[in-house]
Length: 557
Image 1 (cartoon, rainbow, N blue to C red):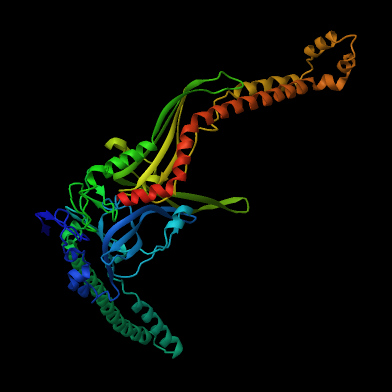
Image 2 (cartoon, rainbow, N blue to C red; image 1 turned 90 degrees about the vertical axis):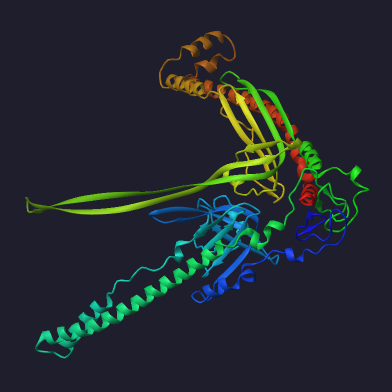
């Protein structure tokens, strides 16, 4: 639809050029059943309780489920998604995250969730953070992603048709009838019971075969109808559902309407949502891109500090600590799943030798096998971020952050890169998803350890230990000669003191190490705090203004 030779999008009430009211109700998105009700009517002939929902992905979250037993340690990955349907209702559910076509589900994707039967996930959610977010165990067995240029679908193996069942009841009937007649009626001719059992078994076999055939054909028919339904759904495009006209493309020159705060093109004269004439205000209005860049600049920092790590028993290494912090908006992300499934079979054979008296008879062997299966899964990928001044950067985040970021999310991220001597440490000092108000796990440069030399202490301990367990006391006698004719002289004549002189000296040395080590530790900590102070002040400022920032980025859209 156009007005003033310009396109009109869904939920717009006014023309942005002339200000006339426009009707956009017919541009509303449609559901599958309202668009083509015959599809589900046909499926419900074989799956009466089948349900279907189509909508746009509002948010995604990657999580894992685990199953552990004596022989299994299995982990599976899922996306927890929130889907908004054509009525504005939100459906929350899990979908498979390991399929190559669905491991990169994004916010804004248009999905159709088809559930021929209700299905639940029974494996336990792996971690406590996921248990706070994932609210149910439901999962649709068929999912279709209506991409702008193609359609992708997955179908769970639980919907595969049943195989032909092997007939076996007739065997049991034959045995029961034959034994029942021969022993119950005490027949003199066993062949009579066997023959009667064979006749009963034949009748049972024919009945069982017919039953299995009917079950197999019903399963094949259900599967055929399901495939026809999926093929019909794959012919429905994103445009057919009306999602291509729902969101106006964003531009760097977009501004916010001062009346309703909607995001509108800077070239418009009127707000497309409320109809306000914005010509008189445009000269003093910053574009959204400029406002975003200003906010990002306010919370960005980059500096490098020299650092000397004071050690007790070794040289104090020098180096530099680089601190980086930035606020950015997610433009896109590319995710891949990585699955490892390994089964290890262990076979053990036990031999037992048998004897009669003192004479060897034979050997017997008992062989047992056990299989242990280990399955691991995870995701990796890249995220493209918009930073201040329109800079676009590619970043690799950990699985925890990557699995929770959506397109359009605002993120604050800071890290320290420590280069001291031959040591290089990377620490994620802070990671906050501003849009979702979630904080991720961190590590810090403060409290860094392991730069000292413990080998020297152990060497000294060995020397004093050897001294203690020998009779060599020459240093003690030298001290006694020095203290002769003094009040301390008797101390050096005491046999106990003579014997424990090595331990006493080693104890005093350790007291010195403890005091001096504490001084070095306080100096190191003080310097670490000084280096991190500008970054922590920025983080504290961000946290205090978080609610205001969240409201602002929500208005920008």
